[in-house]
Structures are given as C-alpha cells and as structure tokens.
Length: 219
Image (cartoon, rainbow, N blue to C red; front, side, top):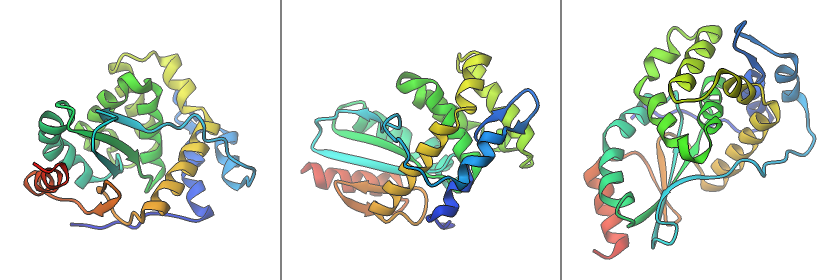
C-alpha cells in the first residue's frame, strides 16, 4: 500500500487557498488566497460528520479518506459496496466518512460533496471516486475546477449553488480545521484508514473488514 503523509501544522491551512474559486474564469479569488495566513479562531459548527447506517449500532466505523487518493477510490468501488450492503444498510454498524486533505483538490472535492447537503453527500462522493482520474485530469487547477462543476451539475445542483459553495472561504477554512483536529486525535497517517470502536486499522480487504466487524458484533 502506498502511504501518504497526513499534513498537520499551520501549513495545512494553505490547502484552503483554493477556496474562493471562480469557475467562470478558473481563477482563485483574493479572499481564498488570503485566509491561509489568518490565525483568528475558526467557527467549525457548520462542518458536521457525514454518516450512514444506524447511529445506535453497537459498532461505529470511521473512515478517513481523500478524494484524490487512488487507494480510497479502489476501496469505495470494491469493499465499501459490500460493507454497505451487508453491514450499513442492514443497520449493523454506524459508518462515518471523514475527509482528508492531502492537497487543495481534495479539499475542493469535499466542498463540492458538502454542497449537496447530507442527502446528496454520498451520491456526490461516489461520483468523485468513480470519475477520479477524469476530473483530476492533468492537474491543471482551472480544468479541475470546471470538471468539478460538471459533476455538481450532474448531481442536480445549479451553477449558482456550486459557485456559492466553492467560493465559501469560511467553510473551507473550517473544513481544514476539523480535518486537522480529527486526524491528529485519531493518529491518522495514511488513507484510507479506519477507526472501529476506537481502534485504528489500515486499509484491508472486505473479508478482513468483515472479520473485524463480526468479532466486534459478537457474531
């Protein structure tokens, strides 16, 4: 498995320099570039955990993943689909998805996913993973911005909704702050990583995942 370092310290806030995108021009707004240097307290109340399954389940699984991580894409296209059918949709576990930002493009993906609210979040997440190579393209920021907008429109958002979300610098700053806080608290060093009832696990096959869940469920 290819491990990637999770970014901490004030430098991580520079990831949010991509907020304030102006899709029509593919450029970055001054406010998006400026807030990386700010040290004022960040209001994180708008950044809620995105979850599936039974909140009262005996087992809670927290996934840490990046929308730009190929291993995360492979997990979501494979093992996750089986976990969802056999453990999440059946109410056996509570599943929480937490975004990790290795780069500004992962942050942009998170901003777009959250633009649709809790009802559309996981649908947009699936689209981001399924089309990961296409929307990341050659890494050109302007092209990536346009590609993300297309995904948003396909998901049923309006151009105005997408623009408003992607220009929300305060939200981007809050998302980075929450990411840092959670990842540091759980000791996350690579993606995808999982915390199952407080115990950390690295990426694993569906069979290994199911064995861990069954043991914790006592089945």
